[in-house]
Image (cartoon, rainbow, N blue to C red; front, side, top):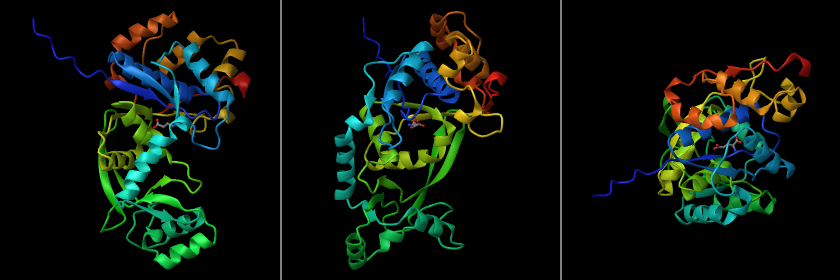
Length: 317
Ligand code: GLU
C-alpha cells in the first residue's frame, strides 16, 4: 500500500490584545477563527498581542475564560508576544543589516501635517519619507535633541517611498493597498504590530489568518514585509465587524456587550453562541458540544459580507 501524501493541515490563530474584556465583536471573530480552522481539521493557536501599553494583566485570563466558556478551544499553550522579543529583534536586525531601514524622528504631529500637505508624490495617509532624506548631520542633531527614533522600512529603495501590493482575501477578493515606509520599531524600542504579526505568523506556521476587516488596510504591508523576510504570507479571511446601534464599531459604551455583562442579564453561554451563530446566518445549537457539528457543516462562502449591527438589550443602556 502506498501512503497517500498527507495534505498540509491548516494552521490558524486567534490573536487578541489583552486590553479589556472581549466584547461580542471580538467573540464573533474568535468564533469565526475557530470555525475556519476546525472546519478544515486544522490547528488553532492562541497568541496574545501584548506589546501595546494598554495591556492589563487581568485580561489575559478573562479572555481565555470567556472563549472557553463559549465552547472554543485552541492547541497548545497560549503564547504572548512579550515573551518573544528576541524573534522580532532578529528580524529587525536582518532588515537593518540589509540597509532596508532608517531612523525616523518625526512626531505624530509632523507626520500628520506632512501627510495632509496638498501636493507631493505620496498617496494620502502615506509617510512622505521625510527622515529618509536626512543628512548625517541632521540625524546627529535630532539624536542630540534627545528624540528617540522609530525605525521605518525603506520600501522603494531607489524610487518613491511607497509601492502598491495586492492581496487576495478569501471573503473580500482582491484588495490593492499602498505600502509606505511604515514603522517596524517604535521610538521606545518596541517592535511594531506589523513586524511582530508577520514574524509570529511565520514562526508559528500559520497559513490562515482570520481577523476583523478593520485590519485589511494593514495586510498589503504585512505581505510586503513577509516577502522581504523570505517568508510565505498566509491566506487571509477578513470578516465583517460588529457595529453598535449608531453604526460605529461595537464598544463598551454600547451597553451590555461582554460575556460578563450578558451573564448579569441572565443570558447563558449557549444564548450568546446562538446570538453569534444567527448573526452569521448559521443554525443555533442546543449544547456547546454541538459546535463540532457546526464546524463540520461550515461553509465560509455563505458568510455575510456586511457588518452586523447589534442592538444591546434595553436594560443595559
Ligand atoms: N491584536 C489584533 C486585535 O486584537 C489582531 C491582530 C491580527 O489578528 O493580526 O485586533
